[in-house]
Length: 173
Picture 1 (cartoon, rainbow, N blue to C red):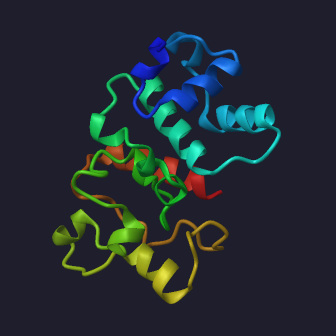
Picture 2 (picture 1 turned 90 degrees about the vertical axis):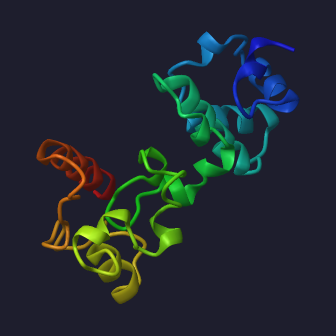
């Protein structure tokens, strides 16, 4: 058993694959992207492998490339597409500090975000417009992006809201 097995989710088979791809140490994996590792393993096997392995590699990427990874965010199933693809507003659930302990993700909670208690609304206006009214997965491609429905999170500072909006719009474009 190598040090690779100290990484959450890395079992015997993944350890074997990583070694076959030339990764012998934790240090050799730092900075690697999940998609890159997944593509390398697919090439090594000569076939498209189960997508769950990509989710596992996303968890590995998070664990190795985050200064202080939250152990609650390390299970591979928290890195499925539904949590890493842009939410209707462009947020990434997997990156949110409230995920998964306080929030199950926008799609699971159907737009009933924690900050709604400050607005008096029952559902996020962006989610309602995008998903409920227009049947879209997210606001990417909307000709009104960003519209007046993109409001500030009242639990964050002005600066944090500006940074978040920039990230969200970047994911949607």
